[in-house]
Image (tube, rainbow, N blue to C red; front, side, top):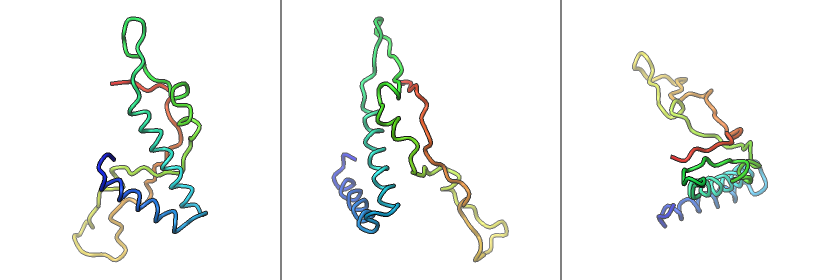
Length: 119
């Protein structure tokens, strides 16, 4: 983020996660996440290529973002809408065993399509 308070909050969260698990699986995921964010920022900020007629050409992940391609797959879960939407009990009552969020929906980043269209 370009907002300093958000940067500080994010840095604090990452630092705390690394402190809690200095060499464990959480540390690996945090490091992967930071690397993925850096690479996605490079992708978002890249200037588009143009051909001889000044038409914008698509990026190639393999050619233009090789480090991002080499990172795949990553052990990072991506939140999807169905996992973020709470489902209430059908009868409207409180149930101790009720799971309001989908438990079986886990989306991981396993790879990337090579061609990235510039819009």
